[in-house]
Image: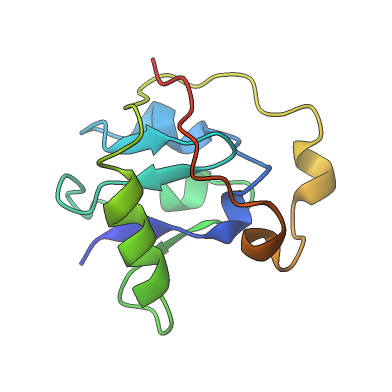
Length: 112
């Protein structure tokens, strides 16, 4: 088992999860984060820290797409280990449906 970041993170990118991760397995895209499933130790400390409820165990039904996305982009995006400022409009997008189709960007973020 591993944890995955879902589309609930897109345009929110609160980054509270990054601060608590003991193995630094988060990677930063332009408008979301992902978890490297090969580095995640399944401790679960990140899940309750996410205000957008975007982090879920990959064992939950329907997470295959997110596991693949996290695995792919965690090898392309830079590692992030410190919380940064969330987007100014993050709260406006919290809970919004269909964010992957509307806003997903494969562009990398800045990382640390």
